[in-house]
Structures are given as C-alpha cells and as structure tokens.
Image 1 (spheres, rainbow, N blue to C red):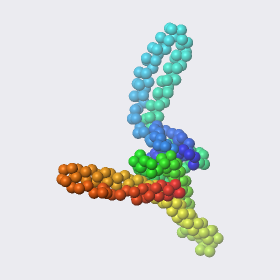
Image 2 (cartoon, helix red, strand yellow; image 1 turned 180 degrees about the vertical axis):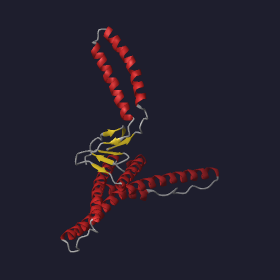
Image 3 (cartoon, rainbow, N blue to C red; image 1 turned 180 degrees about the horizontal axis):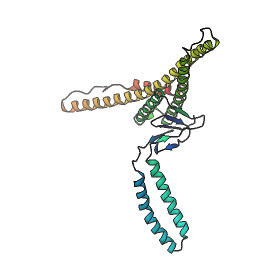
Image 4 (tube, rainbow, N blue to C red; image 1 turned 60 degrees about the vertical axis):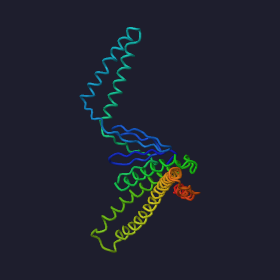
Length: 281
C-alpha cells in the first residue's frame, strides 16, 4: 500500500486501495483524516425519472433565455446553446447517479484489496471504528505523541490489515473447496486424496497464521485507543478531584493536600508503549 489509503464500504463489499475509489453506481462523499480517505456511500435520493425531467426542464428554460440574450449581444448562439446543453446534461447525469444505490467499482490493480466475505468485512469495519477512536484521542494527548508519525503508523496498520484479511478470505475459499472433496468416494490411499489432505493441512496452517496476524493488528489498534481514552478519563477525574479539593478548602476549611488527584505520570508510559506496539505491527 502507498502512503495514502482509500477505503470504502458498500452493502456488498469493502474496498481498500492506495488510489481514489471509483463508483460503479450512486454517489459517495470523501472524508479525509490524515492519510486515510474514507468514501462514504450516500443514500439514494429517491428522485424518479419524472422528477428529474421536470427539474431539467426548469433549468433549461432560464438557460435558453440567457443564451438568447447572449446571442443578441453578439455571442455565437451555438456556443451559448452548447454550454447550456452541457450544463443540463451534467446536472441530469448527477441526479441520475444520485438516485442509484451507491456501489464501488472493483479495482483491477494488484495493490488494491476487495473484501467480500462477511467476517473479513466486519473485521475491517471494526478496525476503522478503532482508528477513529484513536484519532479522537490525539488532541488531548498533546506532546505525548507525534500526530504525523502516529497517523502514518495507523494508516499503515490498516493497509496491512486489509492485505492480511484479503489473504484470509482467499484461504477461506480454499479450505471450503478442500472440505468439499474430503468425503469424495475415492480410496483412502489414493494419491489425489493424499494430495488434498496435505494441501488442507497447509491451508489450515496459513489460515491460523493469517488469523494471528489480523488479531495482532486489531489488538494494537484497540490497545492504542483504550490507552488514550483511559489516560483522558483519568486526567478528567484528576481535574475533578483538584476542583473539589479547592472548593472544600474554601468553603469547609479542609486543608489542601500536597498531592491532589491521581498521579498520571506513570500512565504516559502506557500510552507511549501502545503507540510503539502499533508502529511495530
């Protein structure tokens, strides 16, 4: 995967690519967060053909009037009419696409990954949710992390996760095919059965390795999110405790303690370690 990662989820698949995603139908809006660009499908507009024709006619009438005025002023009439026609056609095409169900086109390059199976799609969607949680903690962590390096590590982890899940998806298909021939009516000592059993063992081992790799990446993203969120919550609790201490000292005569609220110095190491683990995935 390149430095920039594009991801999109529609009703049938997840597409992850280093290049901008294209639409097979419908419209999606792009939301950039650092090096991650998420394409979010828009719901169909619900505008039928009749409504689109009516809108195009209402748009064309003032454009024709403007074209007539420009022609009277000396502007070439075919240029004005041609420009109006292009504008009406563009609006019509945009509305026609907006009325369709948003579906991403399948990339044809080897650097992109398409996840079709439900478990892999759910895993990557969960990783995107975890990445959003991680990014929400960055403003509060301040100088504890470098947002640029953290964004690079997080984006790279998502790209590697997509590749691992893509391999796991292929292995799922291979295992299902091999499971289908397990009970074939052939002799036990048949070379074909022996070869199938050997390949099934290899597929099972590769399946477990891919699962372990995916779990490591998912665990690192979740650990970074939980470490940042926990630190922020503890800091909020510490602030509340200090405020309560000052209030009690003022209104109740309770002496202020030397140390107020939980000491968070030791917690910074946990946050930093979580981001180091994420960078190593």
